[in-house]
Length: 242
Image 1: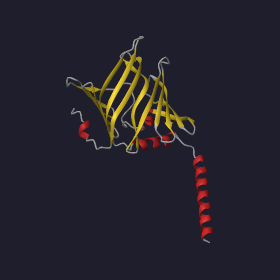
Image 2: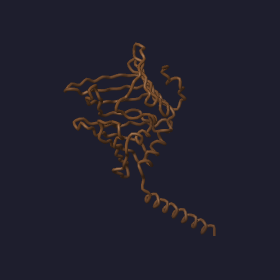
Image 3: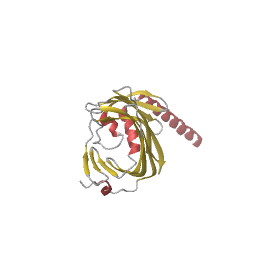
Image 4: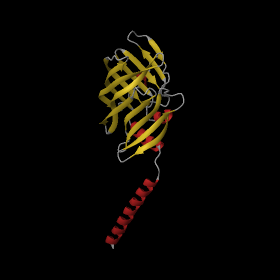
């Protein structure tokens, strides 16, 4: 009798899992569903600090020049960043950016024709700044296409976001610029810290806008070392004082 009951429970369990799988596959996933999972992973990072090094090479009129800078970077979820490199410190809280230069002078910084950071520095930025659609889906990844919303990134036609289907991590960004001679492609590096996937750097090609609306290509690589997360960084660390 006990054996029959056990078999019945096993059969019901298998049937329920099969039906659940069928229902899951029948439900069409949306960009919002994908971003929700990506954001859930990222929001496990309450704060982070690291030694950072930045290599960049601007390509202008056939000339290039590699520059390397090092410093420290700090992040506090969801909308605070502080970086100090070459004795220049930037404080950002959403779109509110402040700068203290090497001589101690204080500056207000305004981004023009840029991403809106009001929602913070999280994957939510994608939904805030782009009209998203799923253009490809396979066992390994989701490919989202983003069309910039009005007033955002007018030098960009579209952006493709490659999202790892297993861990729901944003792995690569492919930017299609208005100037087709330039390209933007960024690959993001991750490291597992305290059982959380943490972005530790990126490398690729992008473009920057110079005065006169001149779009210039740039190679870039950012690395974070000695990364620490969820240590309880104080709010005061991110206060520029003006």
